[in-house]
Image (tube, rainbow, N blue to C red; front, side, top):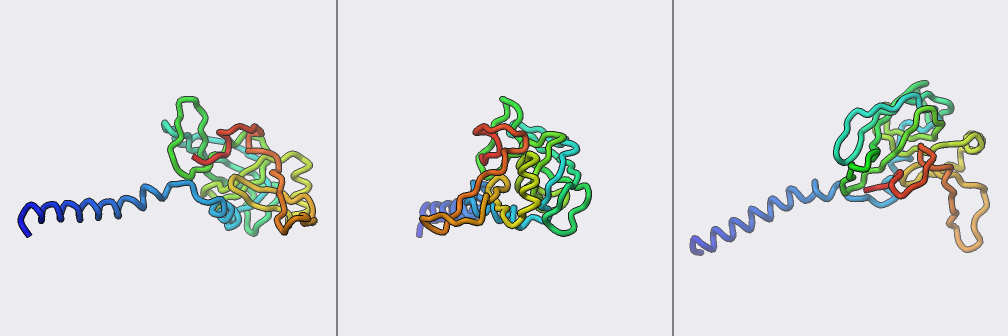
Length: 190
């Protein structure tokens, strides 16, 4: 093998090695299948109905705002939920913020709102959050076995009936994202 061929071979091996080292980090932020987000919510240590006590922006970037949300417990659906707890989330709050590509779920907490929230652990990432009205809150407390988890929050099975066509049961979203607004940008993945 002459020197030129050896240099080309070395260059190819080096570039290939760099690609295989960097590629997993680059692609790891891609949007995951919906089941991934559902499992994150199902496996969360905190599952509760709570009132949002405060929302604080802890970091602002060109892509989003990173927020810390403080909650006061109204009703726990998992064990050992403290009377007050917190979680962090991302929001795109300004027209000049351009969310990056990837699987980030955005939430829009509003102080004073009653929400059903799932958090990985106290102080950790908010895995799901939906605003509740009084009726939805009562239904969730009365029928906790009907709560189902989805990509951005919880869903509530309206009855125990199965569909005629197959064993799939459709679930209705409880209310909406935590700010009560529906828009393509809200509680979405980018």
